[in-house]
Length: 250
Image (cartoon, rainbow, N blue to C red):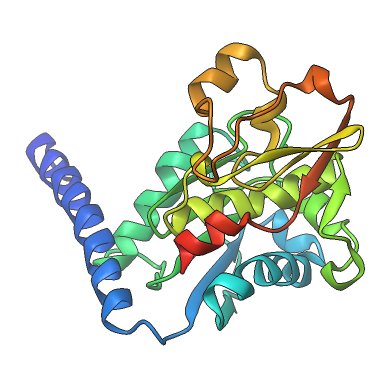
């Protein structure tokens, strides 16, 4: 049995390892800028039951990252991850990042990479939190919705708002965070009678005022203000990053 002191020391060690992991990864990427970015993907046990999921994840995320990053390599871990639940803050923001950090220091079965360590679960993307990210670590819900999207090669880069599209855009959003992007790298633009939200803004543009104000500044790093929903009744989601987001990724 590990005593209280041992537990505290282990937590401190893992917290420090998390910092070391982020710094170490950033240093290696900077030292080898021509290496492909590796996205290693784990599915929860429930998510792994969706046959089309791997194709959709690679198709949509690869299409969004190819322009700014060039070579992107996907590695799907064959064995599903056992989780205490398919969603919720504890799983997305605590359990998964802890397992990645433990794996980085040789203390668990997760073998992380220098790029993005992505967990996809079958949780409900309509419930918050639907996703989470920290440097090089991302977790998203909505596997069943993503799997039911049409192939990326058959889908326009701007689509009407739907739960499927929102879950797919969430995948881009959290991986963008894992690679260093913030909400300020997004945009929400008027196109005729619609507002088109980019991945790093997503549904925040239509959120209640107190949520929106907490997550979005008055103006993005792209030099644009965020329009209000009342200005355009239709909602659209972009499945590509903005030009300024792509520039930041480069």
